[in-house]
Image 1 (cartoon, rainbow, N blue to C red):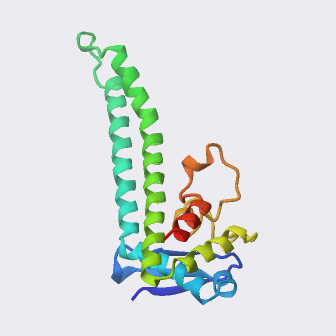
Image 2 (cartoon, helix red, strand yellow):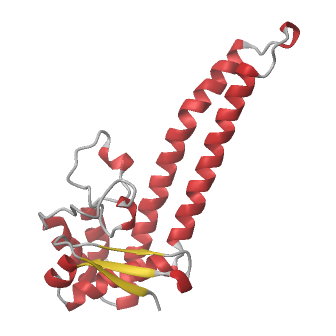
Length: 198
């Protein structure tokens, strides 16, 4: 059984962490405990337990490692083309250097977009599995509506490094260029709609 922790924060939110069942924990804010009814809280906890059951922390960790390896390989390729061969007879064609430079620039961006897309898919999966676990998708849908309408952002505990952990992005009120593409979570309205259609 996962350990349970409470963060003293008035915003409604929660997250799960741990690489497997033995090392898992669920953290809930005091705002969630105070503002959600029993069915809504069960929906949120079901969602978080689904992240543990689906090994989402492990999946995202492996995704991050894979993206990091690809970035290192593209950087290594660029550096070897630029600095690798110093004799004049074996010069690298300038077109290859341009391709390597483009890969070194684009690989981290594409890798991050892939990682964020996987994160959004895992959120949908946790919503669906959490609803199956509680057998009451309306509970989580109602909790997401309250989270959407809650005007109190997570002040103390939220930052970019932990944003993907929470049931809803705690930084959602911040303006961002190409907002949907760089979000850790799918649009809350779409999540609510999917739950209501279950």
